[in-house]
Image (cartoon, rainbow, N blue to C red):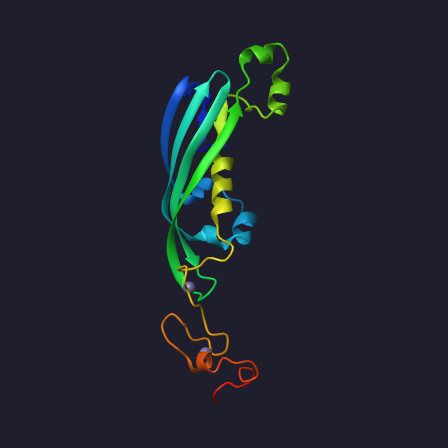
Length: 178
Ligand SMILES: [Zn+2]
Ligand SMILES: [Zn+2]
């Protein structure tokens, strides 16, 4: 698979490597199923930025960084659409399988222990997971969103409806003003 986030190991020097990518949402290569399960994926606004710090130490690769992007969400309380800036941390550790191990038949062991396949460090799954985890289950346009009146549907952020003042048990049920 050809992805910006599939990094050739040969391009990473020992010690610290700093990488920055600007990705378009479609570059995430999300499966249609994932999009259907999570409508928020259709609502990226603009590109996403991936900042990575990769420390290579022997066969070990320590990756930290962040992915930031703007998304359009629908408030679970009042159903308004709003945009939100995400900035999600990334962290993972990988083990590269060296050529020596390959020659002595030890490569399979290395891969089984979570090592890398081939000479590429594919960080796309890590970034995708971080975005998955960041999607709020019940987004709120603001922490104190009052939502909609369950009786008349008025947006309580903007107006007071009559139902709120008559909000006592017994009175509320079926007492819609005619
Ligand atoms: Zn809201
Ligand atoms: Zn109301």
